[in-house]
Image (cartoon, rainbow, N blue to C red; front, side, top):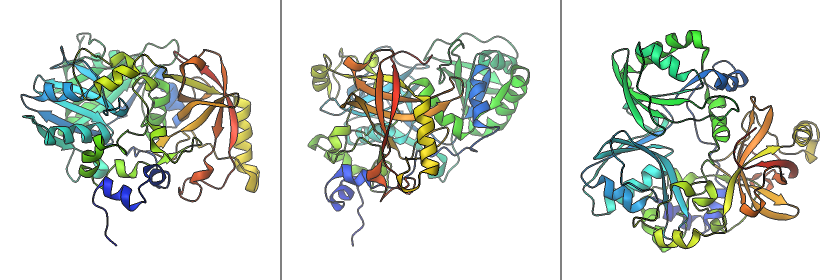
Length: 452
C-alpha cells in the first residue's frame, strides 16, 4: 500500500471524508513539554494572584519571515491592519480562506520593519510559509519548530511572567525601573547582562487582580542565567514556577478558544495548500472530539467573529477572503462566552464516571478535560443546538469548572442557563483516551465578558 505523502493524499486515502478522518485520529491533546507540575496545579493557579513564571521555550513553533515584502505578504493574507505595524509591535494574527472562514491565529511579533515572527501552534506558521513560498514575495522563511519536533537547539528562550507582582520582579532583576510597555507592544531591557525583548500581554483574568504579564525572549544560551535572575528577584514576591497542567488552564482563564478546526480541508481554494502540507504534519493529525458530531467537516468551520476576533478585522485593505468575510460581517454570528458548569452536575458526572460501570459518564480529567486537539461539545438552549463548548478546566481561583464556548449571539446573555452535552460516544472505538461511557448533560451559566 502506498503511504500518503500529503494532507490531500491522506484525505483521499481515508475515503475522502476529512471529518471522519479527524474523528478517528488518535493524536492526544497538544503537547506541552514541561514537567506536569512544579508544585501542584492548584497552588500554581492560585499563584496567578501573585506571580507565576511559565517556561515557554519548548512547546511553541516560531516561524521567521524576513525581506522587503514581509509587510505586503502579511497584509495580503491577514484580516489585520498593518499600516502602523513594524519593529516592537505585536498582533493577534488571524487568517481566513476565500469563504471568510477561520484558518489560524497566532501572535505576530515585529522584530524589525522587515522581519516578523509568528509564534504559537504550527498552523499559522505553516500557512504563511506556504503563501510566502508559492507567491511572488521577496521573503525568506526560517522555522524554529517546537522542541519535540526539532533536532536543533531552539533559537530563543521564552519566559512568560504573569501576575500583579510581575513588573516588580522584572525591575528587581533589571536593577531599576523600566519604561512602561504599552499593551501588545514590545519593550527592551537587560537582565543578567542579556538583552531582553518583552511583549506586554496577559494570560490570566482573576477578578480583582491586576492583569500584568510580560513574555520575555532572548538568546537560548542565556536562558539559564536569566531564569536564575528572575527566580532570585521573585523570592520576596511569592514567585512560583508553573507546570504543564496549570499552563493548559490559562487558555480558559484568558478566554482563548483554542485550536478550532482550520477551514482548509475542503474547497479548491485550499487544494494547493493541502497538497503542500505533509501527511505526517499537524493538520493531518488534527484529532477532533466532542459530542457535536457531524460527518461534514464544514460544520466545524468558524469565522473570526465566532471566536471573538471581530475587533482585529479591518476591511481597509485587500486581503485573501476579504469580500466573503465582509458579507459575513453583519451576522448573524456566534459569540465567544465562558460557561460556568453547574457544580452539582459536575459532581454527578464524576461520581458516575467512577462508580457506574457500563453506564458510566465520560471521566472529567483534572484540571483540564481535553483529550483531542480540537474540542466541540454540543451546547443546547432547551433542545436546540446553539453552538459548541471548547476547552474546559477547573479554575481554583474561581472554585469552578469553566469552559470557553461559541454560541448564537442571541443566546449570549449573562446569567442565561444552557446545557452542555458531555461525552463523546463516537470516539470510543478510535481514541485511546476515550473510555466506554454514555453521553450525559451538564447545566452551565453564560458569562459574556469575564469570569466572576
